[in-house]
Every structure is written in C-alpha cells, then in structure tokens.
Figure 1 (cartoon, rainbow, N blue to C red):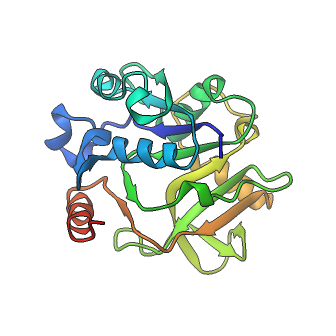
Figure 2 (cartoon, one colour):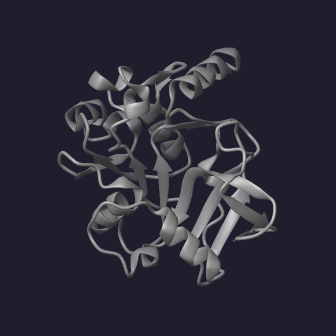
Length: 225
C-alpha cells in the first residue's frame, strides 16, 4: 500500500503536563518505543514510503528524532506550523502540497494501537474518507459516529473515532488556511453519504491524558510479543 501518510504531531499536550513541558506527546514512551516511532514502524511495515509529520510544540525535538526517515524505512517531510498548532483540519490542509493528489493516511500521534495499516479499506467511489472506529472507551462513552455495514452514518449504534483515517484531498476543497478541527468536515461528508468506515477490534488507546497514557503503558508491558 504505497500511499503517503501524515502523523499529526503538533499538539501541545496540556492535559499531560508536566510530562509535555519538555517532551512533545509523540515522543512519550509506551512500551519499548515512543509513540511516533511505533507509528513510523507500523506504516513502513505496511508499505508506506513517504510520511509527513506536522510540528509546532517542541518541533525541533521531533525533527531530531525522525531525521530524514532513513532509520524508519520511510522518507520524511516536515510541515512546520510555527509556534501555534493548526489543529487537525488546519494542520492537514497546510500539509496537502506534501501529500500529493491521491488518498493518504492520517494518524493522531498520541494514539497507541495494533491496527494493521495494510488492512485499510480505501475510500470507495466518490467517498471522501474511510474512518477507523473503535469500541467506546470510558472517557468517550457516547461515541462519535455510527456504523452501518461499511458506511459511517449519523444515527445508530455509535463508536469512537480512533484518530486513524484515509482521506482524499477533496475533503478540504472548500477549506482555507487556519486553526480548525477536521471533525466538522467529516460530519458534512457523513451527511452527504460519502464516508466509509471499518471497525478495529484490537488494542487502541488515546494517550492524551495521564490515566490513558498509564493504561497504554500497562497494556504494552503485559502484552509483549
């Protein structure tokens, strides 16, 4: 699956302070790897050869960690957002010139998962996105989106968006530079019936808060392969 990917790595990580005062979230350790290193390894193993990483907070530390990507088996491009992160929507929009004209994978850097990227179902027909959904964790009991067969819909049994997606650049056709979330764009595409979905039943942790980071670390320590 030789398509590009973007790892969203620009966030400040306020809920994880003081850990993130000196270390950006993507470089926090879970198990034997930092979060960003695990994503790069998983993407490379699935055939991805070009990865864009957006940076803001402690971006120089992320640049130093990834280098040119040689150690990870991928080519690295950096999308620098300066001192203020542009959030998920604005960050991806700025990085579009680095991602090309076709579909690309998007991953939140602060998730830890065993999702197999080679099993990703690409957007079909005129779909704008494929979202990976997971069972609702304690911190998001009501979920985000519903799933009917392989379609993401507005009504029905709800699941949590994993922060992993395959997107088409056309999702951002009416967008501009700025600070904004991708979620309103996804909701609009869902209402138009243009979003595919797949359920991941394996391990997944949102490491964006201390208790969730601790849970991911516990899982990684007790499920070593």
